[in-house]
Image 1: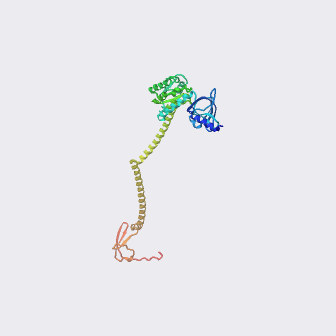
Image 2: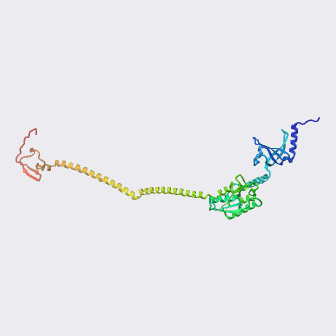
Length: 405
């Protein structure tokens, strides 16, 4: 009997056969998703089936970065991957590296490829984005002449600011020639010199919106000198033109909100500015008036006229003090003089003479106080109040007085 092989050896042998097959190492498989399970580890386990058969599949967590949607039961998908044997169970399965929706998957692949190329060229860089004018006078619109998009833009624009002029370029927005029509509309409005251009349309499928994913539209948006707002589809729809445009709006209605300023809000803002300016100006005037009064007062106090007046008043005060001091000194001196006069009068001989007394002097003009100072026949002068009497002493007579007197 020949040597028997183990199960593991058989599985390894078959696995090597799969690895050597180039077709199975990189293969596209189309089918319907069934039994899809998202594992907590991040891996996705599911079955791919068609009318006659089914194939076990797995996408490891490390490959999921390229998956742009959530897999669900019944989806028709195209999977790029390799077929190999899972040795433990002895089963072969498809190891998926890329998964895209069938039909839409081709468009999505084109979308991602163009998006990557344009991003690498720098068409999405924020440095190239032009600011949207705050107060436009003319707004150009590239969209279909009929439909909800243009009506929404018109209604909202008129409500926000009826003075803004809207210029419509009626373009094809889906089907054959739509991309070329949109490009022509952008070029025409750019030459007209409008302030802002809105490009877009209402919602639809990815095929309906595809004109705004075309490269010629993206390059026309990038080359346009006028700021462009892209408003394609609904909020969840993203197109290439959204990435290139200067501003992306989730809907055409939102684009009108972004492009046209609110006139009433503008008037309110102007009134607020006017009120604030008037208030600030009034405060400034009041402050400066107060400063002017202070400066005038300082200037008045520092002026020569005021200084002269102050010095004159000071001199007048000093003069008055001097005058008062002199008068006081004069009164004091006059009073003392009167006292001295009274004392002198009390001591004056004339005062005595006026009372009947007389002054007797000898020939030497010295007063005679005692009879002992005179001799007989001596010439004496008796001075009275109104004159002198010359007389000779004939006799002296002493007067005895009581000791008690």
